[in-house]
Image (tube, rainbow, N blue to C red; front, side):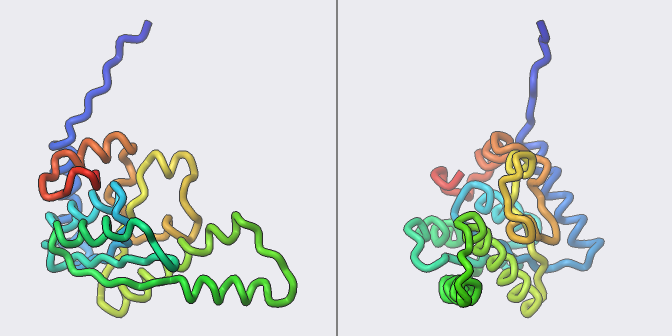
Length: 187
């Protein structure tokens, strides 16, 4: 029987990520970042790590609902708890226009294709807003999602850098538990 034990030092890894982000800031000339804020664990923890590394005044959150978003209060709660600036950019009208255009000549777009349009519009929004405001786009995908392919190519996988790309979902939560500035329910 295999007696290997897994040990994960969340505080050590958290501090290493913050140091990596600070080094990245210095070597790349990066001073500001923009993050798509969903209010889920990944965007919450990444936003908190970036606020520590870059200073909260240099972290911007974009809330990008596709029409109505029932849990958008979580996104507001996160931004308020971290003290980061944020904007709401509702992608609903652009999404609806894209579907209408794609189906205008009688083509039917599959449900799967429609699902992937929204993350691609969010990526486009993040890059357009980021470029206009001199920000780099920070990713929020974790290793579990990347391994399973649970992301949209040229959508939520399209980022400039991703501080949690090498962490599983369980490890991300463990790091979140060390970030006292985060409301527990968002971790």
